[in-house]
Image 1 (tube, rainbow, N blue to C red):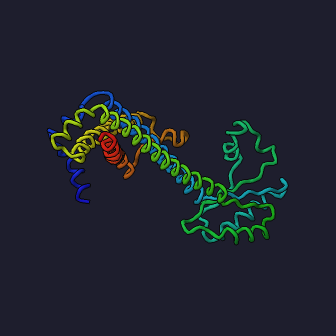
Image 2 (image 1 turned 45 degrees about the horizontal axis):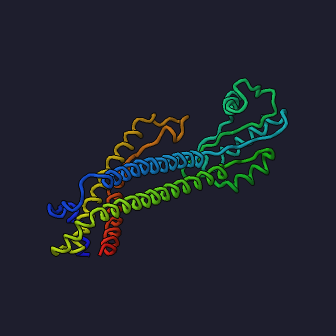
Image 3 (image 1 turned 90 degrees about the horizontal axis):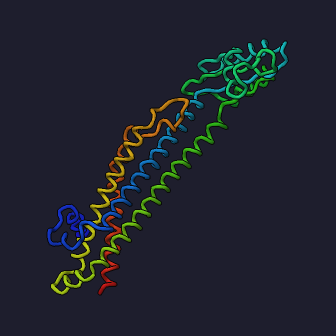
Length: 301
């Protein structure tokens, strides 16, 4: 633990002599910066998509959980009587705040996305819909179905359970996909930084040999490379996260008709991801470079 703490302190404090061992520019420096920036940019979008889709599914689930629909199918001459009976049952059911029979215009607007705005609702055998608003405590769906079956035979209660479950499952899977994406991005970043560190060590094999002759230990040499590549990963990821945030900021604001595609972004505590991504990239660079440096220095003996 003490050695790890010393290595972390060395990354930020540094040593002028050790820094001379690692070239400040070149192919490996550009590769590390570009890979870290690109992976951080992708991570920002992966997290934003996961959070936005989760918020959308949660909002839909809450809206569906607080409402229900009663559908009445009956002959035209019995429709009014059954609708009145159903409303009477609903008004006396604990847990129901309000029940309203939808007018022909409301039903026409509900069907407009599929059949157009000119659908002749009055001339078609369309069931009567009753919109139900629940109290926070909710109602006993099973008991209500039994009452409706006895008093309003043509009524079918839809408490939206079949709609909520798929949304909740989709939200869970999208969050899992987001975590998997972050994991893959971290692995790719580690692989690119490892290749860059190995290339830098191999290119400086002669310098490393001279340093060993004058008494430099492998741990000292490794720390110099770890410092350089960890800071490059941090700087690249910071730039990539900033560009990703700007790209999200320029997207249209959230709209009801646009769904989550117009509501991408970080809200509340989720904005902490913008700070965590560079830190995680630096941790990945620290571990990957340390592992590559120790392995490559053994091979150069």
